[in-house]
Image (cartoon, rainbow, N blue to C red; front, top):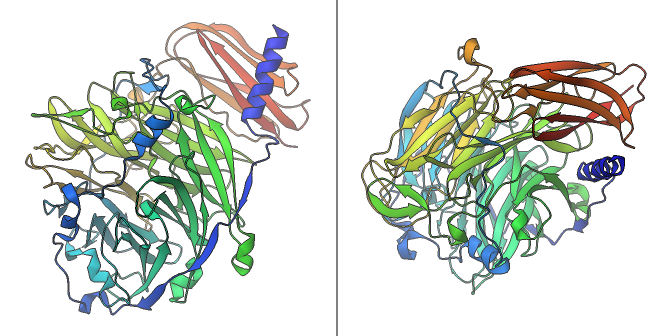
Length: 631
C-alpha cells in the first residue's frame, strides 16, 4: 500500500510541473504592419449603414471547414462516455440573483449574416458593441451615441483595398484609456493575402481620431481573439491554408502596443503552431497591471479522447523583447489536469444538437473552443485567470458550462476551483466569465431547450462561497421569443467586461431572437454588480454535490494555514499531510463528521520550508492539494 501511495504522490508532483522543462519555440516571423495611418475624427466621418457586406458569403457564413471535423477525422475512435460530469452543479444556487442596472437592446441583425459574434467592452464613459460587420457606441446610461454603423466606417480612406469581413473584437485598454477595435479582411477569399485590421483610439473618446493598422497573413486568420497586456496586444487566430482552406493550426502573436498607442509603424511577432494543437486564446488583463516581466499567456483545452492521458488545460507563455524581438519565445505547454470533461457534443459533427422551442433545427455548442475572454487579474498575493468552455454534462448531449479559476501563488498555475454549470434540463453554453476587484464572479450564457426559445441568462457567486458553484439564482437578462431557423451556428462567442471606473460593474452582451427567422437576431446589453447583493446568509452555504476539499488559506504560508472542506452528508473523514517523499507528517482529522462546511488549522511549527501534500478522503472521494511552506 505504501508503494502505491508513493507512486501516486510522485505522479501528482509531476502534474504540478515542479521541475518541468517545456519546449521553447523561437519566432516564426516578424512583420511590420503593411499599412498604417490616422483617421479623421469618427464624429466627422460619413456613417456607413450596416448593410449586406457579408452577403457575398453563401448562407452568410465564411465557408471554412469547421474545426470539429478535423478533430473527428484525426481521432476516429472518439465515442460518448455516457457519464455524468464529476464536478456538475445540477441544482441552481439559492442566493439572490443579480439585479440588472441597465438592460436594453443592442444591434439588430440585418438578416444576411450569422452568427452575430456579439462582443462588447466598457470604458470610462462609453460602452461599445460590435457584431459581425457593425458597431455602435452608447453612453453608460444606455443612450445611443453613434451607429449602428458598418465597421468599414472606421477604415474609410485607409490606404489599400481592404474589405470589412467581421469576426470583430472590441476592448478597452484601461492601462492607457484607449479603445481597440479589430476585424479581419479577406479581399481575395479563399486566396490570400489576408489581413487583420486594428484601430486604436487616440483618446478615451471613441468619437475622436483612431490610429489604424493592417497586418498581413499568408494563411487565413480565422476566429481572431485579442487581449490587452502591458507590453503588447496579444492575438490568437486559427490558420487555414490559402486557396484550399485546410486546417493549419493555431497562431499566437503579439502586436507592438507602445507604437500603436502613438500611431507609429508597429511590428507583429508571431508563432505558427502545428495542426495537432487546439485553438488558443490569449489572456486579457483587468485591474492592476501584471508583475514586471510577466509573459503573455495563451490557453487551450484538450479532451483525453484526443489521445492524451487526461483531460487538461494547456498553458503557454509568449515572451517578447521589443528591442531585440528576434529573441522572442513561445514556450509550453504547462499541463494543468482538470476534472474529467467530455467535448463530444452532437457526435462532433458540427450539425448541432441543442434544441430550440418550435423547430427541429438544433444549435451548435462549439465544445472544442475555449470561450472569450481568458480574464487575468493580479491580486498581489496571487494572480488569477478565469476561462470557460461548453461540455457534454451528462453523456447524452446535455450542454453545460465548464468554468475554471486558475491561480498562481508562487511559480506555477493550478486550478483553484472548477465546476460545470448545468442546473436543470435546459442547455447552457456560449458563456463568458469574469471576476471583479473583490473576487466575485459572474457568468453570462445562452439558455435553450425543447420548451424554451434561446434566451440570455446570468448567474454569479460571491467571493468566499463554496468553491466550484454558481451560488446565485439564475437571472434571465431576456427571454427569447423566437428560434434560429437557418444555420446551426450560434453566437460563436459573447462578452462579459468589467467597468474600469469602479472595477465592480459587469457589462454583458449576447444574442437572442425576438421572432423565429433564419438570421434576424437581436442583441441585448445588460449591466449589474455583485458586491452590493444581500448575502442571504441562511442559504449561503450551499452543499457541494459530493465531499470536496476546498482551498487552504493562506497558501503559501509560514506559520499556519486553514484547510477547509465541504460534506454533502455525514461520513468518515481523514486528512493527512505528507512530505514530497510520501512520509506522513501530520494526521489532522480522523473522525466521523456531519454535512456542511468544516475546517482545521495546520500548524507549521517544526516543519521545514518546502512543498507538502494534503490528502483528503471522505466517502468515495479522494483529493490531494499542494501546500507550500515558506520560512
